[in-house]
Length: 300
Image (cartoon, rainbow, N blue to C red; front, side, top):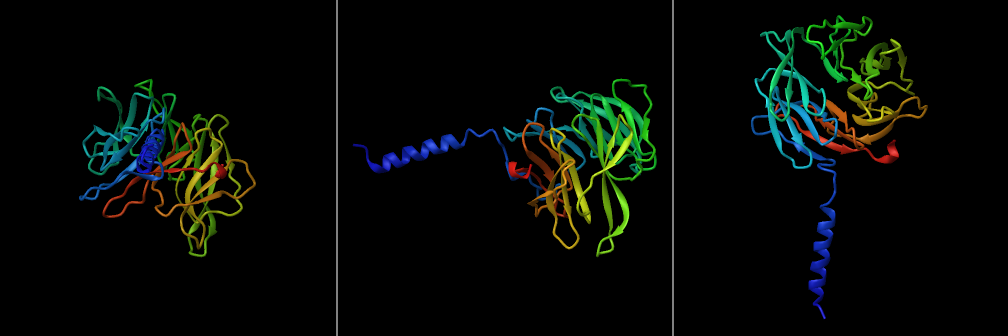
């Protein structure tokens, strides 16, 4: 007869092995921490296969394998402000080329070889970079949103719609057909802050539809689409309430579902393969973090 302690040890080993086979990495946990110099992370995004994330670390471009946990620097130079995946093998990035950060170059880097290519020169600084099927969308403020065909090196940017001049970041839907953006209203919160209307712009129809919420958020820090384009996520707060994560089903009459979100988010992106959001916490002088959080099925 085996000793009872031996049986307990065997069960513990089996449980440990069983728990280690999960495909989810860093769930609800920290992906990257600041170092003693106060590292700052921004523009975090998922690879198309959901296996890696890209991010800007102190204005250098990095990627991280979410299963192995290994990170590597792709482009250095301390002048990168935006990045977006072109496909599974390439990432586009914007580098400022003047001292005032008002103009720069749009380049691309290949992951395996780290070969860099300049796609376009002399591009004015913009707020947002999103890419779908070799079409880049740039939010420029005064000019609105511009379209740029990355497969034609001599192409000129086209104005998508001159009315999209809100000067804030937008979020491109996963299928590349719509833009989620904010518009300032005339309504103020109890704190005197202008409330923001949430809009969805149809690129093909060139038409805007308002997202009808029961009440408007006082502050919206970051937002993104779900992988299938059916939901929107907001790191936001209502007047008189703390910041939380809100999940809204498009065209639903129900109020957005809420998930406590004490860290808040400066940038965030929904995984293309599972209901997880990667985000950067709001930066402090000591730096910020990259985290991943699960979205419970009951919120969808």
